[in-house]
Image (tube, rainbow, N blue to C red; front, side, top):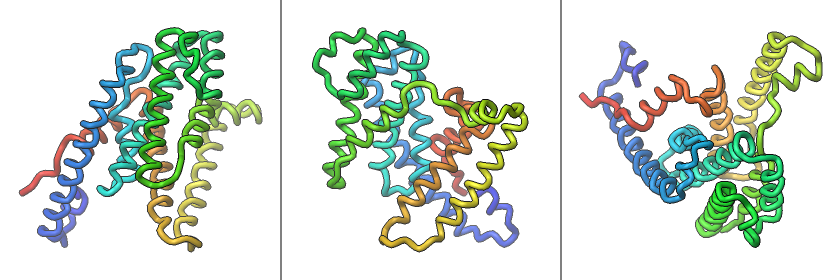
Length: 256
């Protein structure tokens, strides 16, 4: 809108309608993140000092992925899942001992809360939060959409345990290249992948109604690029991340 306002052929009425539309959408986002904040506080894991408290950043990801007002349910579910991924990632990365994490891994793989008292208190709370939230999200999606996604969320939880190898470090280890060369290589890979993804957007699909799913997948790549382009804008929110939070969730578009 700011760019369009500088256009000498700008239509003032159209601009005001766009601003009004944005403010209505922002109000929807604010209600959703308010409900999520209440859920997060009731869950209680925000009190754990070792885990990143990134509820708002997680919600911002979901807004960028599926921004349309009618996808509020999707935004809320995505935010809850991402909160759990971050929590368990932090348990593995910065909190648990090797013995505790081996025990936790067994619980995650069995997906069973029997004998949960064997887990240390903090890890027990973390696993129960994961267990209950995953089952809650799975139930809500089953109720709303008619299919069971719980096994897939569980699989995602298992895949995202602890630190994952980074593309630059992997290429350096595989090729013996310097860090500077590896960075340029990864940039080239990203560029080629973007071209392939953009081409796929315009391919005819055998099933109707896939536009929202395809758009969400493409938007996920966009928001990932945005958050990590200049560092870890998620784990350590930078100025760009904070500016996005302000512009999307807090500051309304000015009305004349």
